[in-house]
Structure formats: structure tokens, C-alpha cells
Image 1 (spheres, protein in one colour):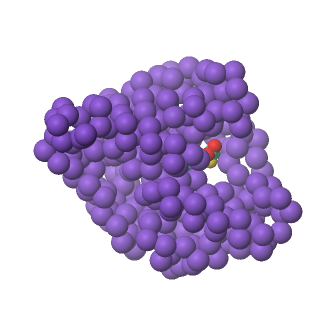
Image 2: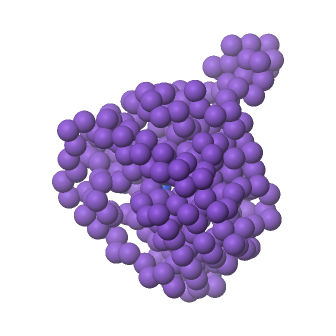
Length: 292
Ligand code: 7PJ
């Protein structure tokens, strides 16, 4: 059994059943990239402006958590300097802290975590899964939620030749160990979610096996699972589509993850994902009378 609530800074989200016969839909985490290459002229100001208007749009669409990321973690990407990441991310956290939605920061750098928490973040999403004691202490000394993600190797070389004896067992063991370390540092289980890390040192087969094991992973570990497959290469491999044409495939993956018990889906297309989840949730509800 997973905890009944997911405590995310100033927010407390129920993880299980809302009403008597109503299935809880996964929370929708909207991706907000503030990397100059994702915006036209690469300038610091326009990047902030563009990110803010994208955030406003996601809020109107009903996003639950906004995930701010300054560093590209695409396969082969080179790391960003600490200064540059702070400059991109922290002003955005300040600007959005009172927007009424939970603010997550996608970073593995302890210094960025510390500044983001001071600026008002509710959650830290770490693709390195809180690898250092320093990172674990920083989050433990605050009230933020943590997403522990699994990755084999680093973004520079993770897709070279991912190898596992048993991908589900290895990912499960890693997530169990890291969550135990976070709890030993002082976090309650209510503040932790786990993520198999699709595409992070995994080939197509590994990704599919992990997708099919969401329910098993949740049962083994007893923590809510976050799934991030939006527009990723796995969707490209399944559909043959380039990245800008992967929305429909990504929606199908989000719905499949929901049926398997995912509690949070990390997506680019917030409005469309929420529509799809609403239809799925209503139709899979056992008390149909209540849902006309
Ligand atoms: C993920 C992430 C993911 C979590 C990225 C992309 C690459 N954080 N940050 N899970 N992916 N927790 O969005 O394509 O899958 S960056």
C-alpha cells in the first residue's frame, strides 16, 4: 500500500480514491523547459518571458505540478554550469511561487536544490535520484517532495549500450535503496515518489518492460510512481513519428500508465492529457450514474 497522501511542499495531494466509486486520476505534471535553445533568440529575458507564458497556459489548462528544468538531459547533452542553471531556473521559481500550483524543479545539483527551496519550490525532481548525502540533507531539511529517478550512467553516455540482467529487478532495487536513504535522512514516505526513468540508460525493450511493470514496482516499493514518456524516443519507435508528432502516442502511453496505477504523469501536452484522463476516469468508474 502506498501512503494516502503525497505531500508536496505547500500542497497535499490524495493518492488513492477520491469518492466512494471514483478512481483517482494521476496528477498531471507539466514540463516547463527554460533552455535558451528551446526559445527563439536564446536571450535570458525572452527565455523567462516565454517560460512564464507557457506556465500561464498550463495553469489555465489545469496542470497540477509545474516541473521547471534548466538543463537539457537529452541523450548526449553536455552538462550546464551551476551559474547558468541558477540564472535560468531561480527567477522562474520566484515568478511562479504564488501561481496556485505546485512548483517542481528538475535538477541534480545540490546548490540548485537549495536555492530553489529558498525561492519557494514544492518539489525537487532529481534524475540522479539524490545520489549524494548533501542532496539528501538539503531536501530533508525542508518540506519539499522528492522524485527519485533511476538512470544508468549519465546523459552523455547513457544510451550507448544500456545493459541489465533484469531491468525491472535492478531498477526496483535502486529505487528501494534510494528511498530508504532519503527516509534515513529524515523524509516521510508521504514526501517521496519514484520514477523508472524512461530513456535514461534504457533501450526500447527495457522501456517496454518497465512500462508493463508499473503496478508491480508500486507494490514492491510502496511509493507512488511518476511516469515520464511524453514525446520520448520510445513513442517514436512505436509510431515511427518525429518528436513534434508524438502527442497521440504520448497520450496513449499516459492512459496506459494510468491503468497500471501511475500517480503522476510528466507531460508536455497538459490540456490533451487531462482530457484523455477525464474520459478514461469517467468510463472506468464503476458508478456510472454519478458521472453523466
Ligand atoms: C524525465 C525527467 C523523466 C523525471 C526528463 C525529457 C527529458 N524527470 N526529466 N522523469 N525526463 N522524473 O523530458 O524528454 O522521465 S528530461
